[in-house]
Amino acid sequence: MTREYPADGADAFPRPPRTVTDRDGHEVTLSAADAVDREALVAMYLDFDPADRAQGIPPVKEAAIEKWLDNILDEDCVNVVARHDGRVVGHATLVPDRHGEHELAIFVLQAFQGSGNGTALLETLLGAGQAAGIERVWLTVERWNDSAIALYKKVGFETGNTESFEIEMSIRL
Image 1 (cartoon, helix red, strand yellow):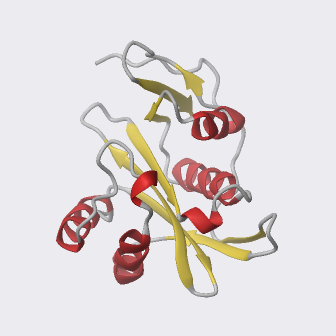
Image 2 (tube, rainbow, N blue to C red):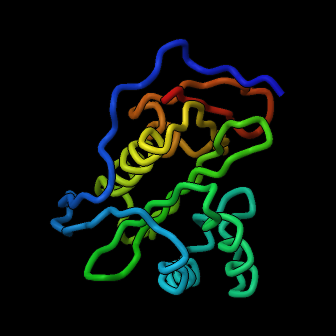
């Protein structure tokens, strides 16, 4: 599969760890995640609003969440979590595909959406990706998800394939 990427690389993104204050006044810490964060991630995904699930992820049942986390907490993936008061409230991941590119997925608990946490989490994940030497990142988003599309464009993603009900977007780090 040949995916289109912007000709120029993005500017530098902030790298983890970092702390931000969101528009609701919450202090949110963004840090690299690994298997140590597994239990907290399972708890976050069990609390995840079913209406915010897209393309079958995150899974709904605990066993399926744990199996999914086995794959995305792999050492080949880049993961960042957002924490407020010690609780994981957001997670983003870059997962390598068979073409040497990385697919992005991001999840923020509903109570923490709309206050800048998605932007901070996405930028920090892309900074971690830059630090790891990742050059090409892509994602798919449902075409009706205007807020997500606006977020991705805001940080530099460009629209590629728009032939289906999902829009493909990409960025060169």
